[in-house]
Image 1: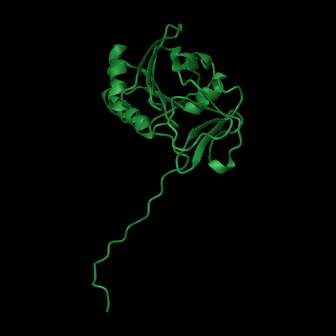
Image 2: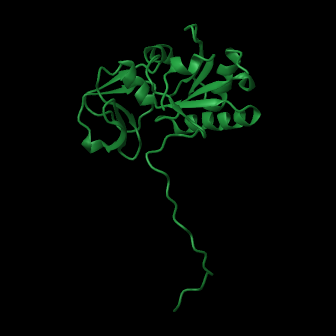
Image 3: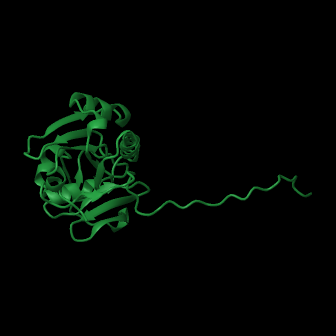
Length: 210
């Protein structure tokens, strides 16, 4: 069952990690609302730890983590996921995940417009509060849309797209009572479908027949 940030922090402080955008964001969430935040524009492998150090967070002391599973930077999200898995070995703790585009939509920043992010290969992630998250070819998109300004995009933005700040210091308080967090036993980047692999059958190399 999904839970809200308020419910997760009711039992004690929690730490939110978001590496989905070009800005790494970490927050120490307090049940009373006295949150502390750190941001870094370094790559995720450095920025995440710089933020934790700035906030004086010792991973082995954290009881609850809140983790952005994407969509966004796959490298950033997976860097955070690997760190969380390692910290679970040191001390098992509760982990909850959320979707970046759902965070924007549920905060009210999108004004009920679909929230989009580049999914590469001329396709886009699309989130609506009514339909959830899906992936659409660029040719299917008809605006208006909203997209997080700190997200990279490789294709031109669809017509009628407006950028909004992806700033957790305002987005998280706006969804404080909204159940957008899912229990997450094995942190990883969000995928629309599981990857499929082609089985390779080894064969002895033979000279071509003449």
